[in-house]
Length: 112
Picture: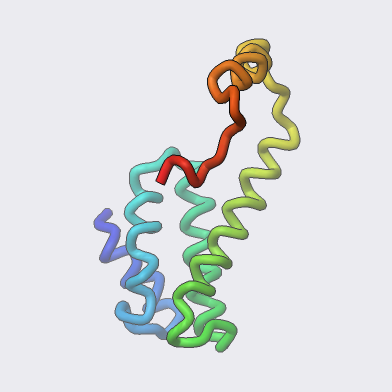
């Protein structure tokens, strides 16, 4: 299925025009290229975002708020998986290597 057509159908179900949900198109595209479990989670987040838009919980101009909401949902989903994850021995080995890789400490801003 085409991502734009799927988003159009999702918007129509909520009584929204495609233009009101167009900022979510990259997420729908990503969903269609993901495994089924990931696809379902992403599409659920998109559907929830569209429902919030209908309920007036999103301000028309506040696309940053939408992104923050989606980021929060993704973080919660990842956290649910990570809390049941046990790091392998290789991960622990990497933990020991990090001080050698960054002897002066790691500052993500230095990557900019």
